[in-house]
Amino acid sequence: MGGTFEYLHKGHRALLKKAFSMGKKVVIGITTDEFARSSRNREVKPYGERKARMERYLSEMGYENYEIHPLEDRYGDATEEKYTDIVVSEETVKSAEEINRIRGEKGIKPLKIHVVPHVLADDFLPISSSRIRAGEIDEEGKLLRALRVNVGSLNPNKVNAVKDVLSMFYEKLEVNGVKVDSGVPEQPFDEDTVKGAINRSKNAIGDADLGIGIEAGLIWNPVVERYFDVQYCAIVDKRGVITVGHGPGFYYPEHVINLVKKGMSIGEAMDKLFNLNNIGYKQGAIGFLTEGKYDRKRLTETAVLMAFVPRIRREMYR
Image 1: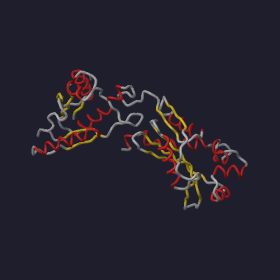
Image 2: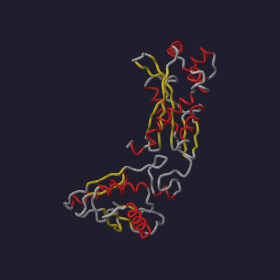
Image 3: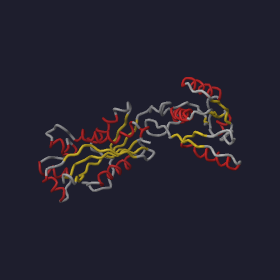
Image 4: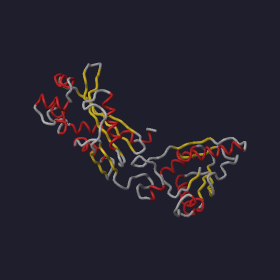
């Protein structure tokens, strides 16, 4: 394996862990100062300093049976027959394939390529030395600025629910409501509900780190033969990865559903039947139906948290 290793960050450590897990001798190429500068318009930490940092870390981890070589070009001596495996990140896999092409031309058996997935920072983008240097993240991937989130709605229940859920994970947070088109009917049914949440998240993200869409809809359950009100939440990051979750479900009095079938939204039907005023922006229908024991914001918080689950233990959701 090889690299500049200007910062020995969490992503680098994942590469090393994979390399040493194979029980073979590990050769680590560290770019020389000249080679490192050739692809950058700036100075890098001296080779000796980077090598010493690597040696300290390997000693701390108890890793043995390794060599560190200066790396003067993209391939080093990996095109020689003595090697059997190569460990690379997702962004350097093409270099490994090129090495195997050269080995093939020499009549040498190709290296077995082990690709280690990117280790993501708190904003769900890969940890990199350039981002550490820019002061965005630290070597563990902790975000050093506020996480920027756009919610695809101006409804305060939705915006505040997102704030409250994400504040459990981030010390610094900027959450803004954005008016967007859901791309589905005002009162969605079944699959249109999750489609609306996804559309809202994509349309909301803009230049934020995350776009979050929340859509409540009526989901038909054939077992009990009723429509359940369920809120879906979709979260999209800058890589375009979407995670989805939903909250609890409940069903309405039949005369509410009858008005919805005639073209009203749930909010309109509730306002008309029970002399309410814009209930969806207040406690929500659930607040009225439970006599204030549960409200729209709590319902939304559950959906947001469920959509965030794959981002909490993200290493498990590869």
